[in-house]
Amino acid sequence: MEFKVKGNTIELPSGKSVAFEYPISEAIEVDGVFVVRLRVPVDPMLNENVCAVDSDGCSLWCVPPIGPLLERSRFVRIGNAGSLVRLINVDGKTFDLEARSGNVVSAYYRR
Image (cartoon, rainbow, N blue to C red; front, side):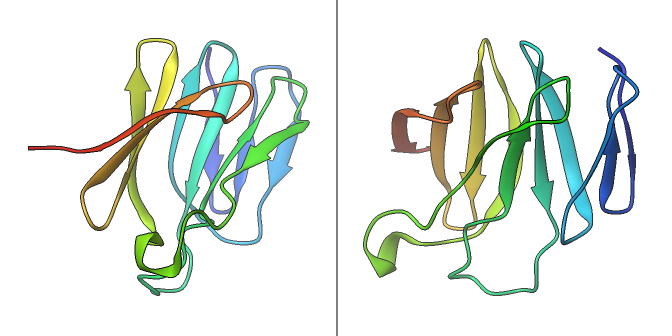
């Protein structure tokens, strides 16, 4: 599906637009779900910089703070992994999530 990113806004194929608090660094579409990685202030402990919306612009999920403090690191890359969303944090840990729910399917370090 075709979408456009302009600053902190994503324009969806439905004609709806969604604005976020911070500029969008990266955006992908996985099975009708639009996932954005936000350019938040540089803080290696801030990992709440990825959110997903549906084609109508309704919020589906945002990454919450996860795990103990030592595991919290901002995400620096997002991508498609088949029907999953792949998130990679600054420490190199990879998370595969269900696109619609945001539930973590697997977490591992890439070699």
